Structure formats: C-alpha cells, structure tokens
Image (cartoon, rainbow, N blue to C red; front, side, top):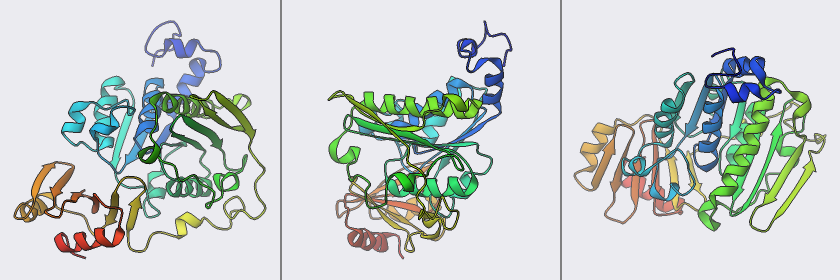
Length: 341
C-alpha cells in the first residue's frame, strides 16, 4: 500500500480525513467475516475488498441461481449456469477486483457447531443473512467473543441496520425478541435492489468506522427506511436488558440449542436442509444416483432431479437441500429413500 495519499489504489479513500494513511494502514491489518453471500453479502464484500480490508472470510451455504442476479451484484449468468456456490463465485470475482486482499471462501451453513471457528482471527462480523435464527447465532457468538456485529436486513423496499458492540451497546436480543422477528422474506414478498445497496452501504460505513477506530463517528441508533414510500427514522439503541442472558454473560442460547436432527426448513424457499453425520464423496454419490435420477455436478455440489419431482442438492460438507417442498417429513422421506438415514 502506498503512503502517498495522492496516488495509488486507495488514494481517494486516504484523502478522506477520518481515514487517511493511518486509517488505511489499520484497514490493511483488520479481518472481517461476512455471513451470507446473497444480496447484502455481495455488496458488503465488494465494499470491504475495494476498501482494502486485509482479510475477508465469507461463508454461504447456497449456490448461484438465475433468480439471484437481479440483486446479488457479484454474480453473472455464467455463475448461475455452472451452479457455482456463492462463496466460490464471490471469491473468483473479488480476487480479480483486489489481489492485495486475502480471501477465504467457506461453503457451509453457519451453525452452533462451526460459528466459533469461523470467528477465529476475526475483528468484525457483517450480517448478510436472511433469517433471525442465524442472526441470533451470530449475536451470541460475537458477544461471547467480544467481536462487533453490524446487523442489516432488507425486504421489499424496506431496510434496517445497527451496530452491536460488546461491552458498549445492547445486543440484538435486547432490541428484537426471538418471537418478534418479522416473517417476511425476499422469497415471500420480493425485494428491489436499491434497498439492498443502501442497507449494505450503511453497514459498510459503520464497519469502516469500527475498523479504523473512529468511535466518535459511530451511529448509536437503529436506522429504518422504506425507499418506495419515502419513510426514514432512527431509534436510539436501548440499554441492555437486565434479564438478557447474553449481555449478562450468563448464557448464549443459540450456541447451546443446536438442532438435534440437523433438519431446517428454509423459509419461503420450498427447501428443506438436512445435515448428514459425515461428508459426501460427490463422485461416489454421482455414480449411485445416476442409476435412478438425472444428475448434474461440479466440483462443489451435485444436483439430482428425482422421479417424484423434487431435487436433491448434495454438498461435500454433508449437507443436502431437498428442493420442491417445505414439508420436513416428506423431505426426510425422500432423503431416506435416496441417501439413507
């Protein structure tokens, strides 16, 4: 990195006084985790990599489909045609944007079993997820480890964002109770891409403030906006609740309550995810399933079109997506029929 603020890759960013050469040096020494490489995650990763954050790890469990291209800015039609995992496609694109940044792509589901390993060596976490179960998991893990979490959500034309800093602010559980989270998702009521960009930009701005240490500039509020109906307001983050198990440091519920059977319905996706006890050898499973199904495969996943009409998508880490149903009983029946339990 050049120290001359008038030239080089980061010249305009270094000319911005709150960052400057010293802030740029700090960014180059920092590590960020982005969980979810969908709409928000692709914008977040783009900002972090272009800004020169030294190490960016991102994790996502899904692969690129044509319906993603309207709002997930790092991907293109070729990524969808190849059914590339989002984390892999993002790494391919981002490595061509800034070769100075170290990138780690993790194709996996963030769970109670692996979230603390994902946080190893990380200075800040950016929320690119689309469900509150994973957000509470990140909240609990970040507060246990003392790592700031920058929350964001976008659906339809609405969005919100806030930064939660252990020891300084309340946590997400203090702001939104587990029973209060909205059931709306992009797959149920849609989303327009401008709100994604705006929310992720709010998140990225707070992330840069945290990473360079500009505490005085940080926003102590939850910002909520609707860009179609022209609404905007901020709410001061509440004090930590006296009965919050996370802020008290007594308990971290999402780290303690892993799904015992490894089955999760992905809301609005007509998809049930099932985690096996061991990894999949995709070559072996391709040979097995080709006898009864139409199969497509790449080095990262295998798709099998079932005679019943549903689809199985197998990942090397032992995950299977049963697509075409939200009925966990039917999903487990199909899984048992073709994979075994």
